[in-house]
Length: 159
Image 1 (cartoon, rainbow, N blue to C red):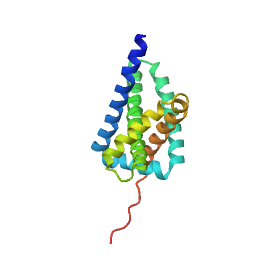
Image 2 (cartoon, helix red, strand yellow):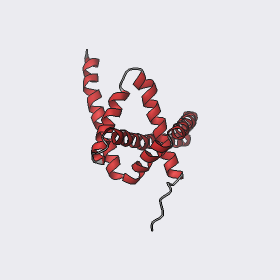
Image 3 (cartoon, one colour):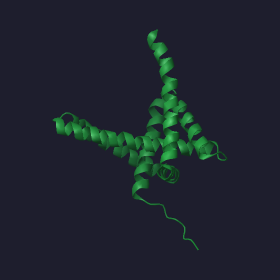
Image 4 (cartoon, rainbow, N blue to C red):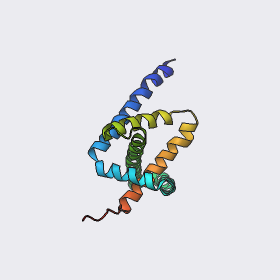
C-alpha cells in the first residue's frame, strides 16, 4: 500500500514540474524552442529518423564509455548530460507544437503549458503512451533540435 500512495503523490508532482520546466524553457529560450517547433512541424519524418539514430548512437557510446576508467566515465556522464539536455529541448518544442495545434488563438505560454500537460498525460497512457507516443516525441524532438541547430530556416527577403 505505501507504494501506491507514493505513486499517487509522485505522478502529479512530477507532471507539474515537467509542465513548469517546458514553460520555463519556452520563456528562457524562445528562439531555440520556436526553431525546434517549426522544424518538427515541417520535417516530422526526417526529425524522427535523425532523433532515433542519434539517441541510439549516443546510448551505445555512453554505455561503452561507462565501463572504462574514471576519465571515460566522466566523458560518458558529459555525453549523457548533453543527450538529456537535447531531449529536454526537443520535448519543449514538441509541447509547444502540440499546444499551438490545440489552442491556436492563445498566448505561447498558455500553449506551452497546455501542450506540456496534454503531452505528459497522453504519454502516461499504458502501453501506447509508454512504448509508442513518448519515444516518438523524444526522437522527433531531438531530431528537430539537431536539424534546427545545423539548418537555418530561410527567411523571406525584406523589401
